[in-house]
Image 1 (tube, rainbow, N blue to C red):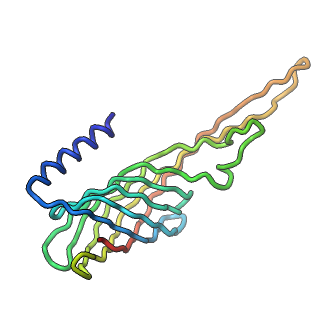
Image 2: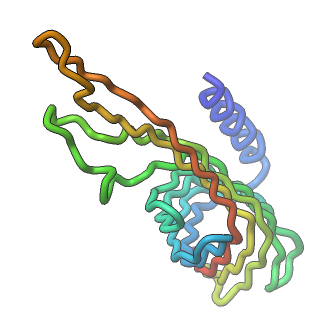
Length: 192
């Protein structure tokens, strides 16, 4: 319910602003590097949305190789400052992190059930950067931000515990695992 309400509020704000300003389609495609305490990883993302004056609102999707491979799907909000060829900007992303099934996450047991239940979790990022016009409709973007990704899964363990009076007792223990990845995100990309 709160996601629907947030979407409705963002849409209403966009319509209110759009009545006074021209709306332009906007695409940002970035490649980058994620640097955290345990590893470094490559990242890729694309954001499609609208640009109204100095504000940009879009829906993004990415490939995040840090920790466990995942695909974040998020809302991106950006604000640029100044009217020069070099424009500073602030941005914020928030959405859902979809963990990819690979390695042991894709293994099934004798009942054709996955050994792991992977949960969809939160993805977010806040950062600063700048945009430099390289042609009339294309800009080069460079950003640095603090990125957060949560991974959560349940490991299902089913095992035969004992045989009592000719019968079999099957026990199941489930273990919940949570990983919180906090890292520096450095990205460069083109905006059309």
